[in-house]
Image (cartoon, rainbow, N blue to C red; front, side, top):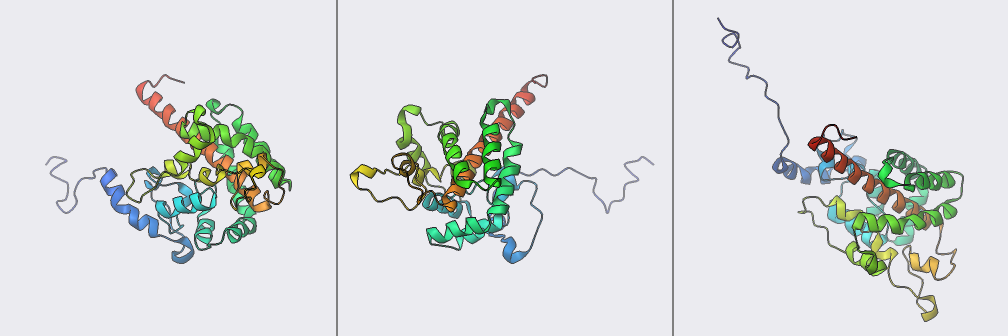
Length: 269
């Protein structure tokens, strides 16, 4: 009797199973409806992060809803806000109340920002990781407004790198790319969603023309006129989150490029 003949007919030989794009797409509605605050804690599916950001797991929200939150409020939703905080933000319609949510959960957000920043260590990122570490440290020392000013210095450079917007298009180009629509049917919506907070950040504002200070965090309101009222603790947290979110997105791209390089040439360092 051969080894093969000795295998019980009641048990099929083990065959590895691989996730396909079709199976991932089929699972996405269930993934997006899972709310950890309502359904309890569950482990993240292995292939979840292929088309979603890890911090979305358990938020009970679709990419379209998260994009709308980021675009309307300017609050980053990729990488840097825990899922239950995202759920609170989505359930809160008023902008000031949303800022209050960030302040109430600032310790959790700061810890996630710190962990996220520490992961960003690729040499292609230049001085940005060290700058992020200093920003998070200043925040931890009780100086969120100071940290936010430093973070906003880095945001513009990081935004151009992530968006690949031609620098000649300046702020208008960044705002234009940020307003692109995210649909639940998009294959990889997370790439656009990280840019969505740039839409209100670069909204037109001119103090000398009598424009009202924007409700959402505005780069122009801080640069064109000194406004400590606008740079509230909530808006300071938004600025820091935005820098870390963009930096982490760049690290993700560095990882992807290096993976491709190693796949094509295993001896590449």
